[in-house]
Image (cartoon, rainbow, N blue to C red; front, side, top):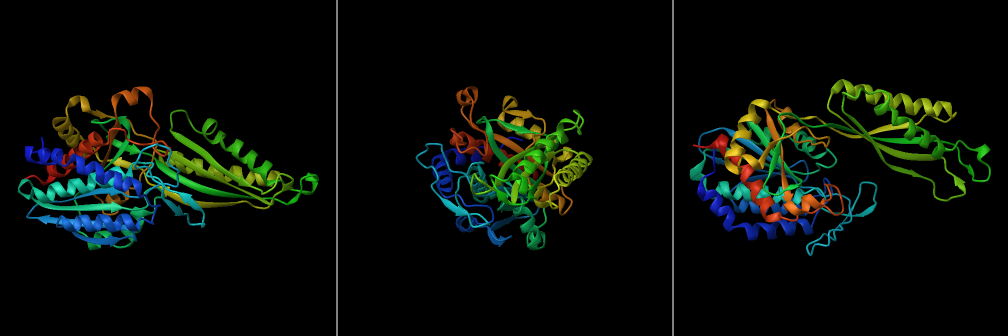
Length: 408
């Protein structure tokens, strides 16, 4: 199904304004579950386009447009930024700051492309509202907060999302990534990994740095834990099974000659299989407690920070969509890809009411940039360098998914 010429012509005529809107959102990112200005701007723009809106999950925006008989289809775009100091050199770079839950003041950046997602969602909504003669049914736009912490989709569901909005028969969404602008990649079946994030507090005994015999050193103990945890992947998991275990933060002490009484580190784990996940989580707990016992230390604390579900693209929904993408964008622009080890909470929206969903990726960079190498998502230097093409492709893909189900 190729889009009607009126849609693509309208999109192309509005590209310059679209890039300016994207840059405005890029300048003003907000941390997860703190997207107040973003939500207000989205609500106002969607109301201007004739959508009925309500706030859901604190800072989420739900916008609905009914246009005659037909199915209900939902489209999701995430809205939060990251605690990263931007280093892109763009003249529209973010200088925003925010406050983490523990009170820490941090720089904030749209380092994962959610500014692109917001803009694509808004433009898709505008085009559907302005061309109602081309489709029939009801569309529900979900502008979701807190994707980076897996809090947003759950918060919207807990706030009664599907009791307050029409229930869809399918949910769609997409994500910009470091690939050539104009291309999209779609997985059939498992698309993204489950994720588990844990905080470990290692207990010790404080002492002067000159008298280590009086201490139980949580730094040394924590280092043993970190080292031994690497064997969960290398020695306890089959090479046929995907498992990623990352320890990216470790904090302890305030002065070089004082052995502290505790250390804190965090674990992030990705997996595709529930059995592999369960076995790895049990191994993590076993190793941490066993190392503490070996050191004669007090019991450590393992706190669950958050988790992400597996993102599973329903094959019956996804395969026809692949064909529609190829017809709209061209055979060479669409690839069927393997699952990626990143994680997403978009699947919660479909899983909560037992409806299928499909989630895909679209590129944001010039071909020569990709060849030279570009920073990935969550980098302080992540910035699509062909935003016009990225926004155009993302909007065409979103329209293709929606109109293919809502066409008259």
